[in-house]
Amino acid sequence: MTETKRISIFPLAGALLFPGMHLPLHIFEERYRALINDAMARDRQIGMIQPKTDGDIPELFDIGCVGKIVDIEAMDDGRFNIVLEGVSRFRMIEELDASTAFRQIRAEIEENAELDEVLASAERAALEIESRKFADLQGYQVDWDSIGRLDDMSFVNGIAQIAPFDAASKQALLEIDGLSNRAELIIQLLEFFGRQDGDEGRVTLQ
Image (cartoon, rainbow, N blue to C red; front, top):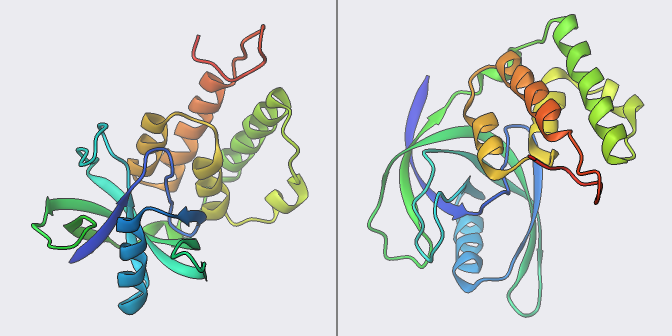
Protein backbone atom coordinates (compact mmCIF):
# COMPACT_ATOMS: atom_id res chain seq x y z
CA MET A 1 0.00 0.00 0.00
CA THR A 2 1.36 3.46 -0.93
CA GLU A 3 0.53 7.11 -0.43
CA THR A 4 1.55 10.09 -2.55
CA LYS A 5 3.37 12.94 -0.86
CA ARG A 6 5.44 16.05 -1.56
CA ILE A 7 8.99 15.51 -0.29
CA SER A 8 11.85 17.96 0.11
CA ILE A 9 15.01 16.12 -0.90
CA PHE A 10 18.71 16.02 -0.11
CA PRO A 11 20.56 14.46 -3.09
CA LEU A 12 23.80 12.96 -1.77
CA ALA A 13 25.91 10.34 -3.53
CA GLY A 14 26.99 7.35 -1.47
CA ALA A 15 25.07 8.34 1.69
CA LEU A 16 22.08 6.02 1.51
CA LEU A 17 19.51 5.69 4.26
CA PHE A 18 17.60 2.45 4.85
CA PRO A 19 14.35 1.99 6.79
CA GLY A 20 15.01 1.60 10.50
CA MET A 21 18.62 2.79 10.25
CA HIS A 22 20.30 5.99 11.47
CA LEU A 23 22.41 8.35 9.36
CA PRO A 24 24.43 11.24 10.89
CA LEU A 25 24.93 14.23 8.59
CA HIS A 26 26.74 17.55 8.83
CA ILE A 27 24.71 20.24 7.03
CA PHE A 28 26.71 23.26 5.87
CA GLU A 29 25.47 24.34 2.42
CA GLU A 30 23.00 27.23 2.62
CA ARG A 31 20.31 25.50 0.57
CA TYR A 32 20.37 22.43 2.79
CA ARG A 33 20.41 24.53 5.94
CA ALA A 34 17.17 25.98 4.54
CA LEU A 35 15.95 22.41 3.95
CA ILE A 36 16.55 21.49 7.60
CA ASN A 37 14.89 24.67 8.89
CA ASP A 38 11.87 23.92 6.70
CA ALA A 39 11.69 20.30 7.85
CA MET A 40 11.89 21.29 11.52
CA ALA A 41 9.00 23.70 11.01
CA ARG A 42 6.85 20.96 9.47
CA ASP A 43 7.18 17.21 10.10
CA ARG A 44 10.97 16.84 10.65
CA GLN A 45 11.18 14.68 7.51
CA ILE A 46 13.35 14.93 4.39
CA GLY A 47 14.04 12.58 1.50
CA MET A 48 17.50 11.11 0.98
CA ILE A 49 18.14 10.21 -2.65
CA GLN A 50 21.21 9.57 -4.78
CA PRO A 51 22.10 11.67 -7.83
CA LYS A 52 22.77 9.77 -11.04
CA THR A 53 24.94 12.50 -12.53
CA ASP A 54 27.25 15.30 -11.44
CA GLY A 55 26.46 18.99 -11.52
CA ASP A 56 24.49 21.51 -9.50
CA ILE A 57 21.12 20.02 -10.52
CA PRO A 58 21.91 16.36 -11.16
CA GLU A 59 19.52 13.75 -12.49
CA LEU A 60 18.17 11.59 -9.66
CA PHE A 61 17.58 7.91 -9.10
CA ASP A 62 13.91 6.96 -8.78
CA ILE A 63 14.05 5.42 -5.31
CA GLY A 64 15.18 6.98 -2.04
CA CYS A 65 14.28 6.84 1.64
CA VAL A 66 12.35 9.25 3.84
CA GLY A 67 14.31 10.17 6.96
CA LYS A 68 13.02 11.73 10.15
CA ILE A 69 15.29 14.12 12.05
CA VAL A 70 15.58 12.46 15.47
CA ASP A 71 18.51 14.51 16.75
CA ILE A 72 19.74 17.97 15.82
CA GLU A 73 22.53 20.29 16.93
CA ALA A 74 22.28 23.86 15.67
CA MET A 75 25.57 25.74 15.47
CA ASP A 76 26.08 29.48 15.87
CA ASP A 77 27.06 29.92 12.22
CA GLY A 78 23.87 28.27 10.91
CA ARG A 79 25.27 24.80 10.28
CA PHE A 80 23.61 21.68 11.69
CA ASN A 81 24.63 18.25 12.87
CA ILE A 82 21.64 15.95 12.49
CA VAL A 83 20.76 12.29 12.79
CA LEU A 84 18.16 10.84 10.44
CA GLU A 85 16.13 7.71 11.12
CA GLY A 86 14.95 5.86 8.04
CA VAL A 87 11.15 5.74 7.83
CA SER A 88 10.22 4.21 4.48
CA ARG A 89 11.32 3.99 0.87
CA PHE A 90 9.80 6.28 -1.73
CA ARG A 91 9.57 6.20 -5.51
CA MET A 92 9.83 9.55 -7.28
CA ILE A 93 6.94 10.36 -9.61
CA GLU A 94 8.06 13.81 -10.75
CA GLU A 95 10.15 16.77 -9.70
CA LEU A 96 8.14 19.84 -8.71
CA ASP A 97 8.68 23.42 -9.81
CA ALA A 98 9.51 24.75 -6.35
CA SER A 99 10.47 28.27 -5.30
CA THR A 100 12.69 26.97 -2.51
CA ALA A 101 16.47 26.76 -2.71
CA PHE A 102 16.21 22.99 -2.21
CA ARG A 103 14.54 20.57 -4.60
CA GLN A 104 11.11 19.04 -4.05
CA ILE A 105 9.46 16.01 -5.63
CA ARG A 106 6.15 14.21 -5.64
CA ALA A 107 6.64 10.59 -4.65
CA GLU A 108 4.90 7.40 -3.66
CA ILE A 109 5.69 6.42 -0.08
CA GLU A 110 5.91 2.67 0.36
CA GLU A 111 4.51 0.77 3.29
CA ASN A 112 7.42 -0.82 5.15
CA ALA A 113 6.53 -4.49 4.80
CA GLU A 114 10.03 -5.51 5.89
CA LEU A 115 9.13 -4.78 9.52
CA ASP A 116 7.36 -8.14 9.69
CA GLU A 117 9.75 -10.10 7.49
CA VAL A 118 12.03 -12.71 9.06
CA LEU A 119 14.99 -14.47 7.48
CA ALA A 120 15.21 -18.24 7.48
CA SER A 121 17.87 -19.44 9.91
CA ALA A 122 20.04 -20.60 7.01
CA GLU A 123 19.79 -17.18 5.35
CA ARG A 124 20.80 -15.39 8.53
CA ALA A 125 23.69 -17.79 9.13
CA ALA A 126 24.98 -17.40 5.58
CA LEU A 127 24.96 -13.60 5.87
CA GLU A 128 26.72 -13.69 9.23
CA ILE A 129 29.42 -16.03 7.91
CA GLU A 130 30.10 -13.91 4.83
CA SER A 131 30.06 -10.70 6.91
CA ARG A 132 32.64 -12.13 9.31
CA LYS A 133 34.88 -13.19 6.41
CA PHE A 134 34.66 -9.74 4.85
CA ALA A 135 35.31 -7.95 8.17
CA ASP A 136 38.33 -10.15 8.90
CA LEU A 137 39.71 -9.58 5.41
CA GLN A 138 39.39 -5.82 5.73
CA GLY A 139 40.69 -5.72 9.31
CA TYR A 140 37.47 -4.33 10.78
CA GLN A 141 36.82 -4.62 14.52
CA VAL A 142 33.22 -5.76 15.00
CA ASP A 143 31.21 -6.51 18.15
CA TRP A 144 29.66 -9.73 16.86
CA ASP A 145 27.82 -10.39 20.13
CA SER A 146 25.87 -7.15 19.68
CA ILE A 147 25.34 -7.91 15.99
CA GLY A 148 23.90 -11.30 16.91
CA ARG A 149 21.22 -9.65 19.04
CA LEU A 150 19.90 -7.49 16.19
CA ASP A 151 16.59 -8.32 14.57
CA ASP A 152 16.77 -9.40 10.94
CA MET A 153 15.77 -6.05 9.43
CA SER A 154 18.34 -4.14 11.49
CA PHE A 155 21.03 -6.70 10.65
CA VAL A 156 20.39 -6.72 6.90
CA ASN A 157 19.75 -3.01 6.44
CA GLY A 158 22.62 -2.11 8.76
CA ILE A 159 25.11 -4.00 6.59
CA ALA A 160 23.56 -2.55 3.43
CA GLN A 161 23.99 0.98 4.78
CA ILE A 162 27.53 0.83 6.19
CA ALA A 163 29.30 -1.64 3.93
CA PRO A 164 31.95 0.01 1.68
CA PHE A 165 30.23 -0.77 -1.62
CA ASP A 166 30.08 1.67 -4.52
CA ALA A 167 27.11 3.99 -5.00
CA ALA A 168 25.49 1.84 -7.71
CA SER A 169 25.66 -1.29 -5.55
CA LYS A 170 24.16 0.52 -2.58
CA GLN A 171 21.37 1.84 -4.79
CA ALA A 172 20.66 -1.70 -5.94
CA LEU A 173 20.40 -2.79 -2.30
CA LEU A 174 17.95 -0.01 -1.53
CA GLU A 175 15.81 -0.77 -4.57
CA ILE A 176 15.58 -4.54 -4.17
CA ASP A 177 12.31 -5.76 -2.64
CA GLY A 178 12.25 -8.13 0.32
CA LEU A 179 14.65 -8.70 3.18
CA SER A 180 15.67 -12.16 1.92
CA ASN A 181 16.49 -10.81 -1.53
CA ARG A 182 18.52 -7.96 -0.01
CA ALA A 183 20.43 -10.40 2.21
CA GLU A 184 21.24 -12.56 -0.82
CA LEU A 185 22.48 -9.54 -2.78
CA ILE A 186 24.62 -8.41 0.17
CA ILE A 187 26.30 -11.83 0.24
CA GLN A 188 27.08 -11.55 -3.47
CA LEU A 189 28.50 -8.05 -3.00
CA LEU A 190 30.56 -9.04 0.03
CA GLU A 191 32.12 -11.81 -2.03
CA PHE A 192 32.70 -9.47 -4.98
CA PHE A 193 34.10 -6.51 -3.06
CA GLY A 194 35.98 -8.71 -0.61
CA ARG A 195 38.84 -9.31 -2.99
CA GLN A 196 41.88 -7.28 -1.95
CA ASP A 197 44.51 -5.40 -3.84
CA GLY A 198 47.65 -7.22 -2.80
CA ASP A 199 49.81 -4.08 -3.02
CA GLU A 200 47.65 -1.70 -0.98
CA GLY A 201 45.32 -4.01 0.95
CA ARG A 202 42.14 -2.24 -0.07
CA VAL A 203 38.79 -3.27 -1.44
CA THR A 204 38.94 -3.43 -5.21
CA LEU A 205 36.97 -4.48 -8.25
CA GLN A 206 40.10 -5.63 -10.08
